[in-house]
Image (cartoon, rainbow, N blue to C red; front, side, top):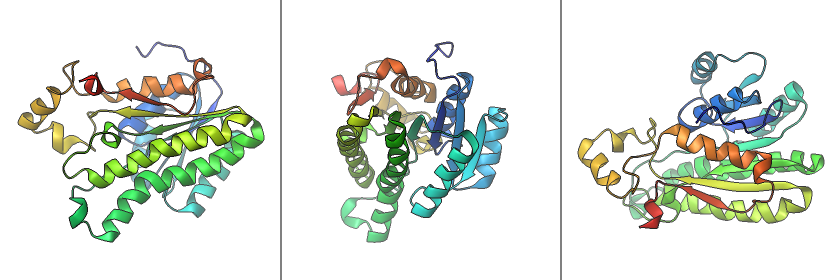
Length: 253
C-alpha cells in the first residue's frame, strides 16, 4: 500500500503533531513521496527522535511549537516559508484528551482540551489559509474522529471539539473555495497509537471495541495516512468541505 504514488514530489506540507502517532505516519508517507515536510510538536526531544526515525535530510524541518499559541504558530509558518518558499498543504493532526465527564470537568480542563483539538486547528488554518489564498492554491486536511458523531462516556469534551473541527472544515471550505483551496477532514475510529493505548491495550476493552467495527480490527496509523495523502493530492481537487470516515465500517452499523 505504501507504493501508491500521489504525485506530491517537491510540494511542501506542515504536519502538526508530526513527531508521533498518526502525524508521524503521515510525515513518513509524505517523505516517501519526495515531499518537503515540516513537523511541529511541543517537545524538542520528541521532534529530535522523530527526525532521526524518519531519516530525512534537507526535505524535513522540525519546529518546536505550541499550536494553541498564535505567536508560535506565526513563527512555525514563517520558518516554513523561509526554508521552502511556499506552502502546499496543512495537516491539522494535533489532539489530546483527558478522560472526564463534562459536568465534572473543571473549566481549565475544558479549555485545555478545546485549545489542543479545536483552537489549534483554527489558528493553524487561519495562518495557512492566508498564505494559500495569496498563492491561489492549497490543501488543508483536519483530523477529526468518529467521537464527533458518537457520544461516549468520558470522551465528551474531546467529541465536542472534534464536532467543531468538522464544522470548521465546512466553513473554511466555503470561504477558501474561490481561491482554489480545498479543505477536508478525516475521521478515524480507534487507531493503534500511544494516544489510545489505555483502550486497546486492555484486551477485554479491545475486544468490545473490535465488535463494533465490521472489518474486525482497530485502525493502524497507515490506514489514516493514505486517505490524508489522497485528500492532499490532485485526485481530490473537486472534493471540499467533506469529512471522510475511516472507521472500518463502524458508522455503517
